[in-house]
Length: 224
Image (cartoon, rainbow, N blue to C red; front, side, top):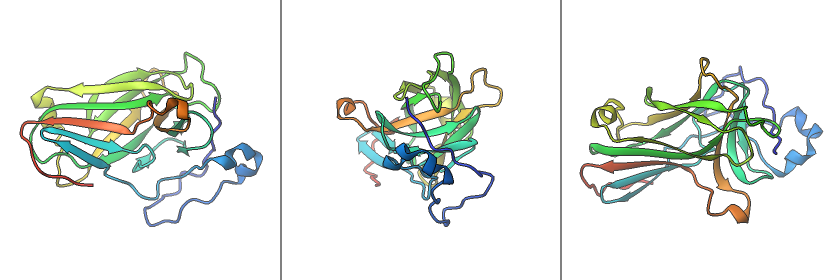
């Protein structure tokens, strides 16, 4: 069970040049939140790139989202099992950016720990249908479990060459990775994206969003 800060007034447009958000006036009514932090993104990241021959991996920290369309959203690193980005209530999306390999792709695999989002312990039926898109092209939809404070790992895998080509992943510009709980989804109870562990007993389970590529040719290109 975990309690999260309500972020109000999201109709206001935030830009990367704006100052970090001020503490919500509701903080005083939730003293337990003082031990953690909440934030809107003040800068986005294209991730950390690791490469070994034809194996190409991008690591995205869950707090480095570029934008969100949830009515209530933020990042939590206080008490609990994992740091997580959260979005509620109902439908919405999180977008991340990344730079891809500069050579053709053979395979693509994305692994991430997810759950629905609830301000209290989620009921088993309070799941969310999450669609994953790259550059506007759907990789498919999965129903993710109710919010239990830790979620579960979900993977999207593509080996079809035509589908990979249609994603138009490039190294020359930022690509968009987008997690969507859509308006037409049957189950829409928000979304949690989990990252680093907050508890030593779960040290082996915390990880960033992983985008793994197998390329058709090796390259000595490395970026950080």
